[in-house]
Structures are given as structure tokens and as C-alpha cells.
Image (cartoon, rainbow over all chains, first blue to last red):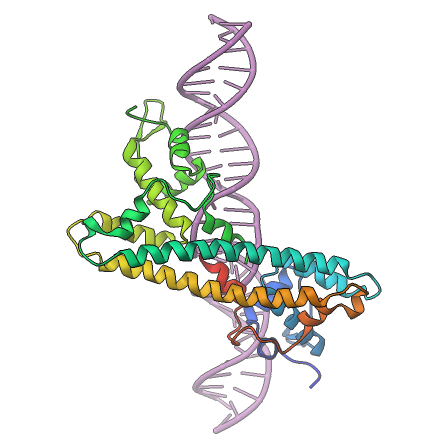
Length: 152
Length: 152
DNA sequence: TCTACAGTCTACAGCGACTATAGAGGCAAG
DNA sequence: CTTGCCTCTATAGTCGCTGTAGACTGTAGA
């Protein structure tokens, strides 16, 4: 099989068609050839590249990091220290999110198990949420969850 | 102190001024009174409500859940079962994200420690990313990280 | 009173990484 | 030829804010 349509590429790499087109629009995937009727045609190299992107996204690498990694890939002679930096940055990011999520888990668990039914008026969950002085965050005005959701 | 400006409310609840106005625009915070010159004026109840919102956001509750919780708060006679459902849903969400992040952490750690320097051509990190058959995800075409980032 | 300067106002664009929708045209099997 | 899926472009929406521009207001010191 020499050339495949976007749908086949999509299945081969496990990335949605619309996402592939999106990647093309942000220059993460190069522009493919086109059939006479204008349909995109890809070779096997596209599967490789897209799988790479997908795997990196699965690991939470932001698009810009993936762009860097792909550029580095194309300079096989260079030292891979830079790659290590990017990967460790990502690992640190994941670990930070992990510890924040663990704190969230603990508080939610506590809240949920404190609730033994009854009326809204005495609900421990709402009480706990309304509690003004809680423990989770430094007071910089940004929600923990916001930080968590920002990337990854 | 009877009435406070948005800046004071911001400090009292630990939520940015712009965010408060945003909450107003999406009807999460009601419209406050205004001074003759048009500045927003809040009472202490606003601090309560905003702190509640902030705490819930810190725990990753999506805005829509918070809206539900606030509505429930205003029906003190009702049973709090619904509150429990919302909280447990959030807890389940957090736990799912935790387990995905743990898997990410493991793979990233493996990748990073496999890299002992050298040239790009032999870099284990890139090799690992390029590896077509990896283990993380079911093949539904959505990146794990996407799911993680979606909410929370 | 004048002058800084911080705070507030509205309206709208931008972020990241897609997803969804509309409306049109293409392609292969029956 | 028709059915039905695939592909095309372009645009708007998602979530939860954040940032910007440009104008006005409120307060404290000289």
C-alpha cells in the first residue's frame, strides 16, 4: 500500500481525522500530497510521525514540546541532552500534578465519608465546602484545579 | 464594614477581580449593587459564596456542578443525597485521573532513566516515543492527556 | 487644589488542544 | 443509479479563565 487517505491514517495511528487536520493547520504535521480531487494522501512515514505525536500527547507533552522533539529527531548527530531536559520537565510536571491530585483525593474522600445522609441543612459536604479556612492552596488567587487543568 | 468593592472582595475570598466579573457574566455570582458611579458593591454574603465557589474549584468541581451545589444549598429542607452524588462523581473523576497520571509517571520515569546521554540517533527517549505499540491507552483516538486535561 | 497613582469600568480577543457543525463534493459497492 | 460512507473547507464552540485597550473614579500626599 503506497498511499492512504486521511481516514486510513487515522485508524493506523489512532488519531481522529479532525485532529490530523488540526495538526496540519498548526504545522505539526506537514502538508500531504493530494489526489486529483483534492483528498489528502499519506505514506507510511505519516503513520510513524503521527504515532510519535500521539504517544507524546498521551504522556502529556504539550504541542510545543513535541515540536521541539520532532526538530531534534531530524538532527541525529546532535547530543540528546536537550531531549532529556524536555522529558524531565514533563516528568516534573506530572509529579506535581500527581501530588496535587492526591491532596484533592484525600479531601474529597474525607468529605464524602463524612456525609451520612440527612437534610441539606446539615450536609457535611456543603459545610466542608463552605468552610472558609481550608488547607489546600497558597493564596495566589488561582485554583489548584486550574493549574492542574492548564496542561496535561 | 457594610459594603466592599470588588478589589476587597477579591482579597477576602482569594479570587481574582477578573475572575469575579467572569463569574458574574456566567451567572455563577449574582449581580451586585452598584455605587452611583457604577462600581460593584458587595456584602459579606458575597465573600461566603465566593469562598464556597473557590473551594469547590480547588477540588476540581466543574462550574456546572458548583451551580448545582449552590442551588441545592438554597433548599435546606431537601435530602442531601444529590450532594453526595455530585461529590462522589468528582471523587471518581479525581481517582481516574490519578491512576492515569500514575501510569504516565511510570512510563516517563522509565524513559528518562533509560537515557544515558549520547547522540540523538540512539536516544532512548525518542525511541520510546516513536515506539508504535505502546501500552497506555485503549484505541479510541483520544489522548489520555486530553482526557486528563478536559476537566479538573 | 493639584497631581499622582491605584482601582474600577466595559468590551472583546486569546489561550490550549481540540470538537462540532454545516453544506458541498467524491468514491466504491450493489 | 443510488445508497451510504468518506472527505473537503470554513467557522464556531468547548472550559475556565486571562490579557488587553482605553476610559473613568477614588484617594492620599504636596
